[in-house]
Image (tube, rainbow, N blue to C red; front, top):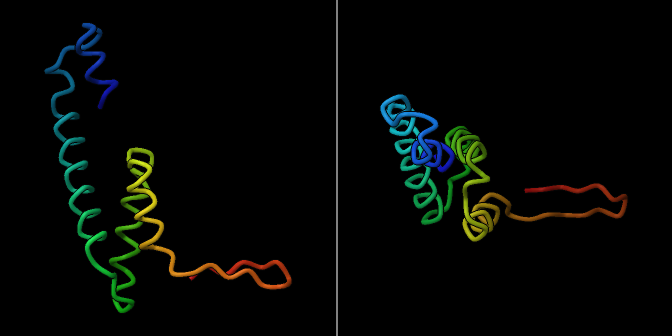
Length: 93
């Protein structure tokens, strides 16, 4: 979105040419922020694995737009434990 705003400000493109795209980005950003706050505020029940996987997929698409603190919270919510066996295999729960 920043790139679009910069292009509009510099006159490279007209605002009306990308207004729908900006609106869609803003709606998607709001949805992701809402889902993130919901996930941070609760434990995800194991019986609802499909919903959890869908949410993780959606957040994964926007991972680079999360702050470092938000990324840490997400990782802590997603990963219960990491086990390193003697044969150097890693198990993530």
